[in-house]
View (cartoon, rainbow, N blue to C red):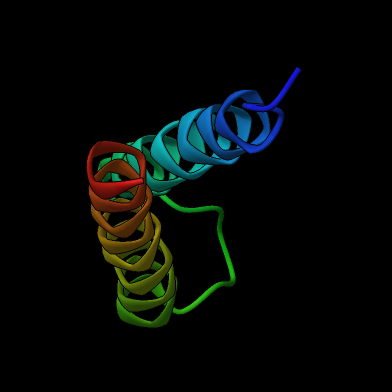
Length: 65
């Protein structure tokens, strides 16, 4: 029971990866009528890259810890 933080960190890692990947996929999908397409792509792209960077940080924490 001494390694209780590793499963929690793995869960956060998985969530960050899934949210980052889906945000990147959403940035390439067509946008709705009436929305600014460039703003949507930039926002989804930013959240996607941020999620993947967070995923890499969590992987590093799992390897080092």
